[in-house]
Amino acid sequence: MKQKVKFPIYLDYASTTPVDKKVYEKMLNYLTRSGIFGNPASSSHIYGWEAENAIEMSRKNVADLICANTREIIFTSGATESNNLAIKGVINLHKKQKIHIISGKTEHHSVLDTCYALQSHGIELSLLTPQKNGMILPEQLQKELRENTVLVSLMHVNNETGVIQDVESFGKICNAAGILFHVDATQSIGKIPIDLRKIEINLMSFNAHKIYGPKGIGVLFIRRKPPIYLKAQMHGGSQENSLRPGTLPVHQVVGMGEACRLIQREMDKENKKIKKLKKIFINGIRKKNDIILNGDQNNSVPHILNITFPGIDSRLIISLLKDLAISTGSACTSGNSSSSHVLHAMGISRILSSSSIRISLGKFISHEEILFTINYINNIIPNINKTLY
Image (cartoon, rainbow, N blue to C red; front, side, top):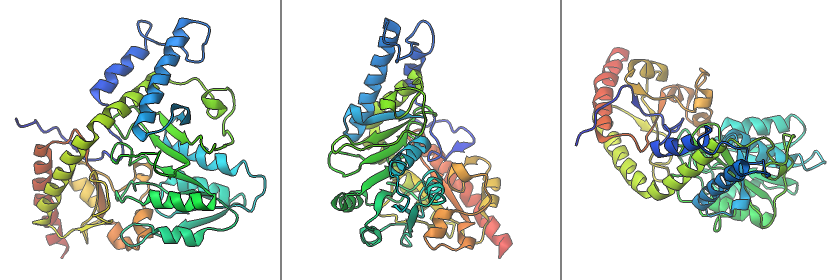
């Protein structure tokens, strides 16, 4: 049965996802007087007990998705806060200034800007340059380690290219050297199975709104064995092991827990569907367009595509493809007219990077929408090329 195409067609799932209807319905039970609306920190009556039980059930759903212990899950306002808490929380425990941290040039700005802020206060910072395919090699990390290195922060899946980094090898290198390893897993959660019993990651950040959950809620995984110590970045309460004070938003925590439960069950099916649609899409637009796919296509998640249309400004592409909701890259920097720092780090010229767009797919995209998108692009982009050459 054909699905009705809704315009503009949403192709920006790496930016955010719509809340799954099952998640939404679950959240509604934790907002009003007829539901469970209590403060989970209120330990003297049933309203608080019920809210606390809901929090702990959600914590279990999150932990199960990544094969962790519930006591290793700290709720935050999102991946940006989790990244800040992980990186600053480690560094601010060290009283001496001359300590060293390692990250990558293709990291999300919530990691890069945090590292730059610490660097301005005397912390030594090394940023690894990826290969042309977007990959950072384990030997690159190994060569950069110093005696005063205390933290490595490298993302799992890049939010602009979809390239998957070898976090398993990175973790082994860090563990062997006695260095803490933090991973921003925002774009890999729900896309790649993650088993933290097997991967030597000490700290891991992610959020709910990339997996069909609500915005404003995220998680920082903090390994217990061996124990990891962080310095709190906010003060005012003992919630979340005194690392993240403030009343927990029960409805959002429940939404994240339900989103994690659903994505664990649906991940394989969703990935198979998106891989198929991605192949159809690439083959379809290649018939009439000269395109470059940025990033290692053999080592990337299926839901993110970074495409260059040589000779055409990406802003023009987006303005003309008004029936498609697409982006030039990270939503966090979409208001910035400068081209992608990720593509620059990969050695892609400013001219080509300014001709690149990101298309990202999700579970609600239909076969009919992909076919429309192919025809739409093929009817518009070749005509732009004719006017330019």
